[in-house]
Image 1 (cartoon, rainbow, N blue to C red):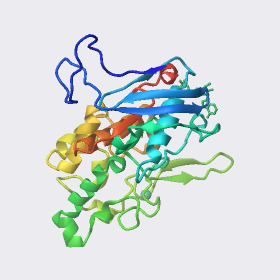
Image 2 (tube, rainbow, N blue to C red):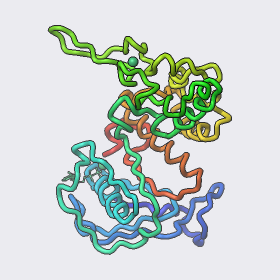
Image 3 (cartoon, rainbow, N blue to C red):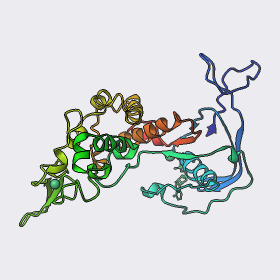
Image 4 (tube, rainbow, N blue to C red):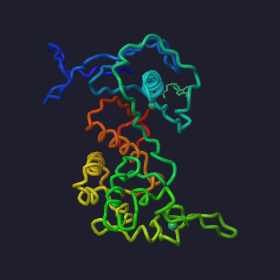
Length: 300
Ligand SMILES: Nc1ncnc2c1ncn2[C@@H]1O[C@H](COP(=O)(O)OP(=O)(O)O)[C@@H](O)[C@H]1O
Ligand SMILES: [Mg+2]
Ligand SMILES: [Zn+2]
């Protein structure tokens, strides 16, 4: 196992700076160094990660890549940051410390502002989250609806167009769009809400249209269709561009988080970070698997 240093122009003099150049690899502009790492099968390991470059950690299955990157780096660097939220363990594989973590001196961590884990865990465990709520693009959509003549005449604010709070949503299904169906002698199942027909909203909310579509119809648009529909709304266009760039143009905005594959969830997280990076916030991301990869060997 080894952390690559990103330098591949063996022999030539080191170059400074981190701006991407055509045809050349970036040079690291610093190092994150951890000494004496002990966890799982890592015993008193020293590791150096170059900063300011893309770095891959490779190795055979079971050599400790996930331990080093997800557990050690995430915990050690993340715990030194303000506002850091420890990642929620969702799989037994990633469950909290079973064997204690011990690390010696760490240097370079002060250069890192944000730690983002881009993994394949769901973006939400209920149908109440979807890519529009997760990326924040739905906030921009709701504002546009609230700014229409129709909404203002009725006194509807942006909250009226949320399916997660009382007001605009269908109360029969509480905005979920489906209801549990009790079956005599058979296991219960879910079916579309008979009241709102799966639209999640009450009729008064659906009377309001923006560019000819009500809010439920906007949630049924794919990312590609929405890119054209919302092209002139900067906050929405930025999210949609990132989602398209990571290959998710075919997903519907309102597709429930529970219906997304692991690779789709991962790419939504990546897109959410990319749209932020455009605002100039430096960050460090780790991804446990190549986006879109589903082969079991890829996380070995
Ligand atoms: N939560 C855990 N508790 C105890 N041992 C673990 C845990 N997770 C991984 N290991 C062990 O640590 C070693 C490295 O695992 P891991 O970091 O997942 O390797 P890789 O990601 O390189 O395949 C393996 O021997 C594995 O069995
Ligand atoms: Mg692994
Ligand atoms: Zn309903």
